[in-house]
Length: 350
Image (tube, rainbow, N blue to C red):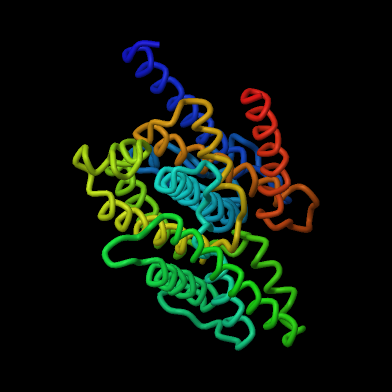
């Protein structure tokens, strides 16, 4: 395939995925216990857009239906989309940085640090937050950031951060904090259900305040990682080769580590631990369009958003009126699909 053909293919694929994302938002907004038609859902969504808001009539739509979509479902949909986007982009960055398609956003122990912070907040009743963000979310974010800082300090060797040491430090801290969470749960039976539900991941408590904070972090972080996409491509050749080609490998690794960690910490703090999104989405996109990070990163962003919206919609409607943790849905579909990919790859190698 020539360069021009590839460019046309990427444009077509991106347009198709964007249309799928828009359809996913509309379908998710009309799906739930309260029955709202697609016509009403579309009009409610369009009524908030500039330029077209005056052209949309909501006279025949009940006020409670407008409230359900605008105040309950839409913040949740947007939050789910940007959590998926953030985890997928960070997963792609870590996979490129560690040169390992099995790497995911939680590889440095961020999830266990966030979980420990959230568990402490639940057990000690630290529910009061700031600027509209709950105490559990705040403590989860702080726990995630402190964990990354600790892993960085352990792995740092002079001015360098060896990838293998970074991974080992992350795995060690992950086990350490997981053990601490287990002990906290053992001695605080009353909070076990809350902690377990948080660990399984959910965006059921989504609010516009969380959206306003998460969206800029994910968008700016995605742009930041995208800026270093070319460097990531060169780093796949090996650190020595990348240095000889003018890439400041250690500087790039530190910047990507900081940006990715901020994205993951922010996403996990509002949603809990949602598995497989940051692993399966960039891996699947890589199989479809190739390893070029200049294309992989934006495609992973939109793919992660679509995947999370679909998973969260299923979590809401699978067993009404009970709601499933979205993390269980992503793992339920992600794990078998990933096993399928591994078997398929193994056959090709054989």
